[in-house]
Image (cartoon, rainbow, N blue to C red):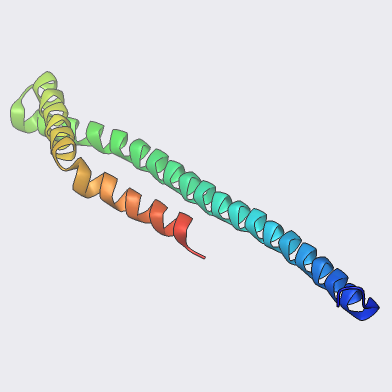
Length: 117
């Protein structure tokens, strides 16, 4: 039955189509990985730029708040200590809520990015 030329030719065509399909699948996987890496790098770049601008703004606002508090407190040192204490309280708040505010959204985002088709 397999000695028939038509059957051998059909099997050869099937093997060629299968090789082509495997090549296309590997190419698709490469493109999918590249797309996900580019999306991830884009998000990281946007976050870095946003955080840099936010940090610079926060420095200027901190100085403005300290100099504004100077007239209320009477001393520039105490005004800077109050601003620094506010940032310390904010840091403690973020440490206590890091799972809810940082880890869970990050895991959800990375999971949706890496598992999407």
